[in-house]
Amino acid sequence: MPRAETTSLDLADVLVGRGVPFREAHAIVGRVVRKLEDEGRAFAAVTDDDLAAVDARFQPGDAAVADPAESVRRRRVAERVASQVARIRERLG
Image (cartoon, rainbow, N blue to C red; front, side, top):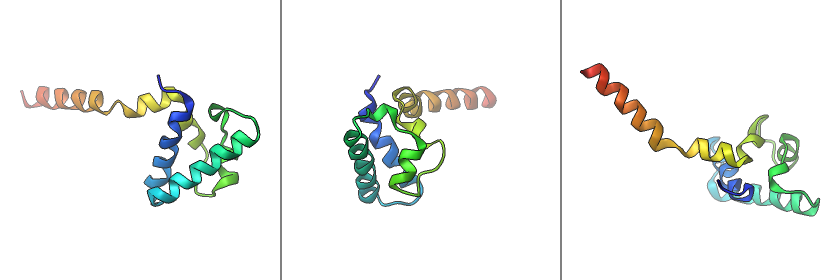
């Protein structure tokens, strides 16, 4: 399981998915990390309010992406695709 700090890229991906250029999204998440460090808080403790205070393009629920377990779940694409392929093969006979 990744450490919470490694999920900062997941937060950047959220913004990129909303049309924010990656370089800008990375800088925004860097400001979030810096804010938390300045407050003596761990990245895993990030809240939706923390995110909104840094950039209005964050939305309620985005802080959940910083959870390492959620990061792993979101990255299990190969397992989901394999499952979908198996279902299609069953339907095709």
